[in-house]
Length: 121
Image 1: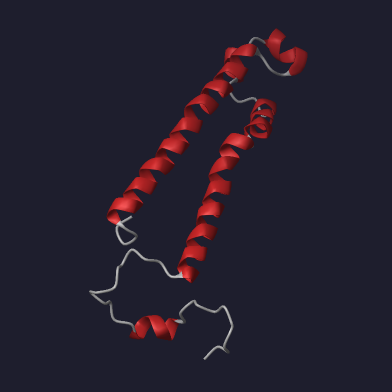
Image 2: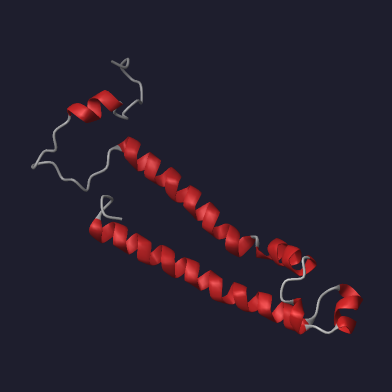
């Protein structure tokens, strides 16, 4: 048993096994511990998914150096600075398509989680 005044409100594994679901208890109310865990996981997912948007400049430099989408460029364009306009247009198209798709996917996933609950999503 934790001492009085401690902020240890997370149940242990033994506590969760012995608990029976109560029909009178609202199943949508989260304990403070689970709420903190949910916030931590949400922040982690946001950091991982925002890397696609905020890290794109570094990634596009790497993709350009490795020669992705350079098949549409002439040798003269590539010899100057190893990039060409058509290559940059392709990389911009990928970014323009991927960014809204990530956010739309997160929105749909959040709506499914809200409506179906944690057990189904």
